[in-house]
Amino acid sequence: MATELPAWAVRLRAERRNRLWSQKEMARRLVEAADDDVRARLPSRESIVRRIKAYEAGHNQPDDPYRLLYARARGGG
Image 1: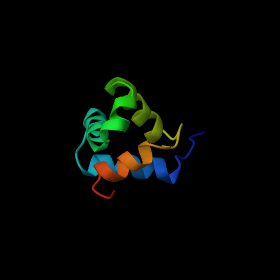
Image 2: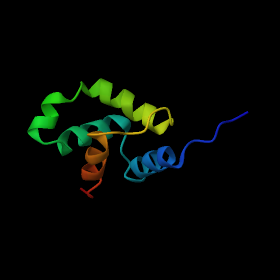
Image 3: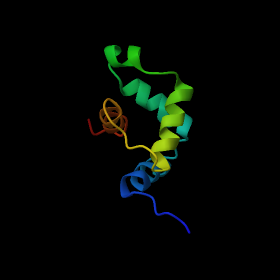
C-alpha cells in the first residue's frame, strides 16, 4: 500500500526539478541564499542534501531557517 506524499513535499521536489537542479545544486543554492550569520550556523552541504531528501520524501517539513532559504533560493524572499 503506497502512502501519498504531502502536497508540500511534492511541490518542493517539483519546483527543484522544474529548474533542473539536483539535490546538491539545491543545497548549494540554499547556502548561497543565507546571510552570513545563518550561513555560519548551517550544517555541511552533505547534511543539507540529506535534509532536502527528507523534505522531498515527506519525512520532515522545512522549518526556520530553511523555509526562508527555500523562498530566497527560488527568487521569492
